[in-house]
Amino acid sequence: MVDVNYLAILAAAVVSMIIGSLWYGPLFGKVWMRLSGVTMESIDKAKARSMGKTYLLAFIGSLVTACVLSRFISSGISVVFLLWLGFIAPIYLASVLWEGKPWKLWLLNNAYYLVTLLAMALVIRAWV
Image (cartoon, rainbow, N blue to C red; front, side, top):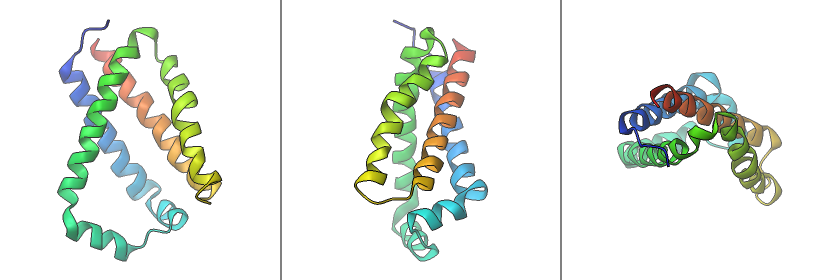
């Protein structure tokens, strides 16, 4: 078992949130909105409900991901790609196959998860 470095996990979770806000904000936000059918009106409604709670839950999810990733880091960074390929990419395939979402949305979201997982792994690896 790998020793858990809680500071590295926290840093990796913060990196995940930064990448997410850039990816779904200035970098690809408009493309994501168009492909997923999200409107500015629905975003404004979500903000009014409680974005703080949404971001808190997303951050907790990032902490869990970072903690699990920390268990695999001793096997090398390439295992992160395999985890993405074996679990994330196929699971999100259902959104295309069963929900009728566009392939471009699948590609955009999966590229985000791959970039984020690799960045989180690099942060954790740097502290191990």
